[in-house]
Amino acid sequence: CFQQESVQQSWLEWQWLRYLGTRFYGMYLWHFPVFLYFSRWFEGLPTLFAATIALFMTLSVTEISFRFVEMPFNRIRQTKAQAEYATAAG
Image (cartoon, rainbow, N blue to C red; front, top):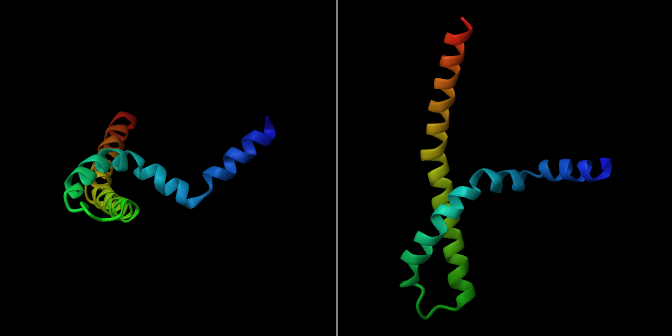
């Protein structure tokens, strides 16, 4: 049991896994609209090339969404929670 916990702990220390974890839901939300929108532009292109471009676009839109939509809302929510905690504690 101890061995398994240390393996799981080491996985959590991988930066790229944490990066994907924080953005995975955004990737899930954005992949279909991106693939749908760009599918008409991909006609005639090799499948692997088109998939690579679509993946890059999905990751780009996800990152933009994370930085300019999710992070500001998370900061607002955190600030509000801190204010409520300070009010309740004080």
